[in-house]
Image (cartoon, rainbow, N blue to C red; front, side):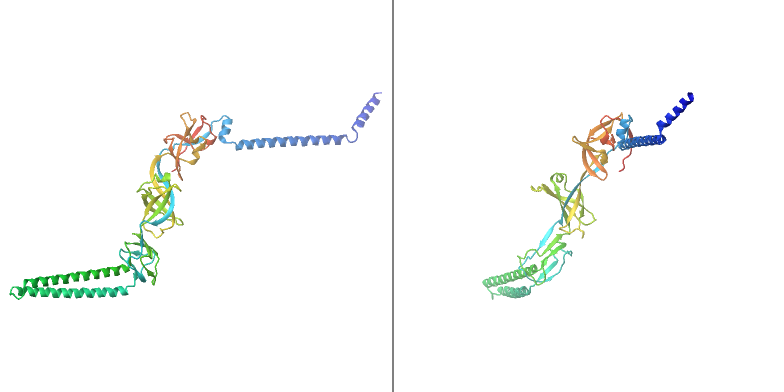
Length: 398
């Protein structure tokens, strides 16, 4: 009875499992392993994304989130001399340009003795004009002078002889008076002839085109064989003493900061040379169209300074004692420009500032700082007023 029951139970288990029972269990085990792997991979991906997001978070924000005090770089700017530089552009020109034309009656040009770029002395002949006719006139007037002098000498001799005979009674007092008048008239004719000769010589001298003052020849507009007259216009242009200038165009506000005598540097376009000069005249008027005026900068002669060329100018309009900060320390929003400074408790305080000139050294602060404050150099955009920080004092390089 028991044997039969035991045999029946074993047969029933085998019949329930069947021949595919072990294979089905293996598939369930494999499926459970795959699901476990997927769960682990998903968890790793989620943790990696979280770590990546935390790594890109700003250090100040992360420190604040974790309850730590962030460390920021600060510096005490102090004060230094800041030169106020005004930049302008304009053209080069001769400081005193001298147009040279025909002063006399003119004629045919026989020779041109200078070229552009040559130096000329005061009174030096630049070009000559044919004077063959004028020379003959001069010779005729010179002959008249000689004839008048001969007549005057004869009249003087007659007067001298008459004076010797008057005491003997051979010549009357009236004859002496006549001979004296004749002598005086002859002397007057000499003076008239001499004046006419001098006038002719002066006219002939004006036929030569001469330099009115010593200077540099800039242009030449005449050639040999050309017929010139008083209406021929300018034949030469010269720069008196070779002095040059730059006509720097400045805005109305910048022009008000410039005064006569301040130094300036000029750099012609296309050249790496700079030339030192000074402002010698400030325009008393402003162009109503461009709202600009002209500051004239005197420059010494140099062959690299070509009138008509374009140049850049830097004018020193003065100097001031101001704090200078790196550009990263200065922030801006709708309320204006500001910086963060640290108080005695190392808490950030917003400080409004007025900016001055910007240069390679940094930004000059015209007002808002006295130079003794501890100013946050960077990360100010991530700070809030009143936030406590740990300062790392650094020294600014000048």
